[in-house]
Every structure is written in C-alpha cells, then in structure tokens.
Amino acid sequence: MTFGELLERHEREIFAYVLRLTGNRADADDLYQETFLAAFRGWPPPRAGNERAWLYKIATNKAIDRVRRTRRLVPIADLRLAAPERDGVTLSDLGTAVRALPTGQRAAFVLRKVEGRPYAEVADALGCSEEAARSRVAEAMKKVKEAVR
Amino acid sequence: MNALEPLVGEARERLVARAKREGLVTVGYDVMDSPLGPLWIAVGPRGVVNIHYGATPDPRELSRITRAYGPGVLPDRRSCDRVLTELDQYFAGRRRSFDVPVDLAALTPFQQRILAATARVPYGELTTYKVVARQAGNEQASRAAGAALRANPIPIVVPCHRIVATDGTLGGYAGGLAAKRRLLALERGKAEVPEGGWEPSRR
Image (cartoon, rainbow over all chains, first blue to last red):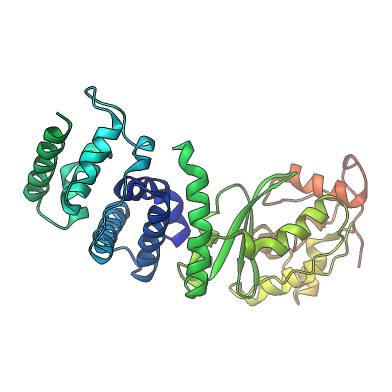
C-alpha cells in the first residue's frame, strides 16, 4: 500500500469525522493534516486491512490532544453537514449539547451516534475497552438528552 | 459527501505540501484527461516513472514504484506539471519530442537499451522490433524486444507506438491497438492508418 492509496480511500470520511468533532473547518483542516502526517510518519499501518480503524484512532487522539493543548471547545457550526435531524431536536440544540460534553464523551458520541461506527471501532479509536466505550456513549447520550429536553 | 469535496481537496493540497517539505513524498501522481482517455502519470525524483492507460495505477507498476521509492507515493499535480504540459502540447500536434526526463532505473539493462533505442525513433517514423533489438545489441531478440516494449512503463513519452512488425502490421500495444493507431495517425497527419499498416524504415 502507498500513502496515496490510504489517502484516497479514507480522506473523505476522516475529514468528515474531524469536522464533526471540531465543528469548524480550520480546525478540521489542521486535524486532517496532523492525522495523515502522523500516519505517514508512523508507516506502515500496524495491521494490514485495518487502516481505517488506525486512522480513526490517530484522529481521535489528535483531537483530544488539541483540546487539552488549547483548553477550548470549538463550536459545532458545521454539524449540519453531518447529522440528520432526529426526534424533533433541532441541530442547534444538539450542537450546543454535544459541545458541552467532555472530549472523550464527545468523540464517543460522534463516532457512535453520528458516524454510526460499531462499538468495537469506537473503543479502538478511543483506546479503551468496548465496555468503557459503551458507557461513555451512554453517559454522553444521557447528558445530550437532558440538555435538549 | 459532495459538500465536503472542495474542503477535502484544499486540505489535501496543504497536506501534500507539508509532506513534501518533510521529505515524506518520493513520487507524485496525477490523472490526465487525454484524447486517448485517462492517463495515470507518476513522477519521481529523477523523472517520469510511469504513464498508465487508465484512471488508476497498474498494480504491478505501483509495486515496482514502491519497491524503488518506498510508500511515499501521493497525488500531486505540481510534480506532474511539466509532463502534463508536454503531453498536452503533443496531443495538440504542437510538440514532436519530449524534453521531460524519464526514470528507467528500475528496469533491466536489456529493457533500458530497448527503450533507449525506441526513444531515438523520430516523430512520425516507424521502425521494427528487429531493428530495436539490433540496436540494443541482439538482433535475434526481437521477440524479447516486443515483450520489453509491451512492458514499457512510460508509453507515449518513450514512443513504443512507433515500433511495428517487420511486415508493417502494428504488432501489440499496452494501451490497445486503437490507441497505437490514433498516436500514429496524429504523428503522420492522417485520419486513419492505411489497410495493412505502413512500411517501416529499414534502418
């Protein structure tokens, strides 16, 4: 596999994912670049055939590092690109609720509820057990539901 | 996903520029929309490494490129600018020879000699597998010359379409015989190849 093949196969979904995580284009652009540069520097992928989970994991870690570094949460203005409206909740309400989540729960929520990734992949991306991933998603859901009630 | 395309495209340009600055990119590629259909074009540090008839690379060629230059093969129009410009001029009938360097280092010495002999066949002229085999040092090896030309990684720029069988029939071509006919027709200013092909030069 080459860098180009990895990029062409996964760049769109990784960009969409980091856009949902950060909520703005400039930060998404940076995270997309940091993710792929880290992948190129860390070549080869740890497991053949599992490059996608590897990229999600790098992207998630980069996003968490970034929040820790900058100590700020960014608005989810671009969430309209991502999530369909559900259960009569407006996207603006949902954006506010997701924005208020701690980073780990926020990544878990976006991976599971927006991206629809299986729990095994959520766990992989977050570097935790599947059980912990379920509990983070459940906790995030609870908070989001309370916030939009 | 469509709303994302331009955003991803711009992010990708910046990513490739950064990867280049860090020395992570060894080969840049692009896809050209040519009159013969899409051409996948790759350029390495020493010149053009591959032109493939198709929008995606040939897996064997890609393996060869990766063996020679590592995995740092990324989409990058800038690396390909020069060869793209020259190909555009060639297809428009405004260029008769290519100045862009080609990189044949990963080929066997025999293949290199065959392709070097092929590169000397002038625009619009024809020669035979037998003649290029002789120029590569082995007149008996015209069949091997044919095989080397079929495996030519840089068609058009290394003009293997100018090599035909001794009886003037077209022989084979990696891009298909229709592409070979179109290239020869372009160079010889004819709309079509005459019945039975052309008479090759006997040099």
